[in-house]
Length: 311
Image (cartoon, rainbow, N blue to C red):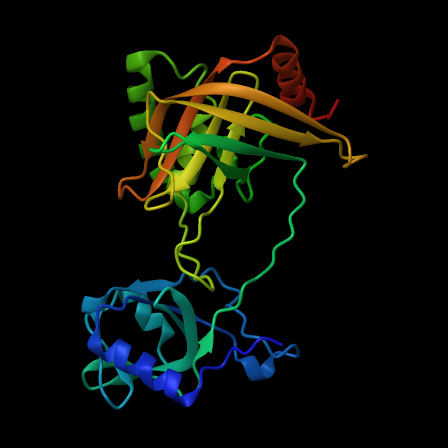
């Protein structure tokens, strides 16, 4: 079993690192681990999002106490609850469990004796559909980047507004009005039905997920695909940023549900007609139309999008 708990010397190094500052942390309320039969820490079942605190919002005392300075109001809901505190130390993901307490200066977290490494989680997802983006880098070589269906999105069905949660629909409608206005200027957005999924993607809360190692390349999210276009989602500061007006080569990979060993690859070239983003400039959607697609592949994609069956 891989060692997760830091040694005493390692903990002292991390503590000094936190004291020196410039360390953003994220806190999330958790269920009491002692009540869990599997011995693991679990997030609360209620829809509570993690709260990210930048270096200017915390102060770490040499006694191992983290004082919170002007934290978001949502933090008050965590008082007297166990929380999971996550951060990166030299790109290594670390966490500890403690209790958020009210003090005269506001609120505080005591750094416990035990600090753990965040472990890699192997997620085995078998997709009936995925893709590979072929990207030319500065030295002229071609790199390949995985593209996988975005979690919770139904790709081969007509997007419906009701797929957007009620609490996000007002924000999504504001984005829709903005994106439709931009699309009308060029007339390249087709019937615009893909904008439903675009607006859902940029409007949804997507808190940072801490990993065992910081900065790993993440797959693009596939948000929409039919016989005319494909929409890819990505986030700021990822390895590759797609740009409007640029062309890209993509290989789509399909497998039969009944016989996964039987696959079909479709090679397309496409142009990013638009790159939409949220108001914070952290989430992006590249709306790409095909510039090169074989007729039989176009027919396959059309039938796939209208019948929901693999051929």
